Image (tube, rainbow, N blue to C red):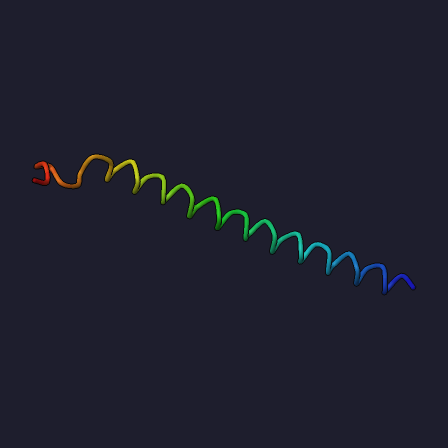
Amino acid sequence: MTYLIKARKIVFYQMAEAGMAAFGATAGVAIALAIVCFALRGKGHPEPLD
């Protein structure tokens, strides 16, 4: 019985760790996208299209 409880705790911690890693990766992608968007802001088509 105690082995089953320990096994469930291990699975729970592994899932929590995977969730934190996914959240961190998503936050990193969002930050990189924001940096690229702000860096490229106003860089396209300097002359008007006629």
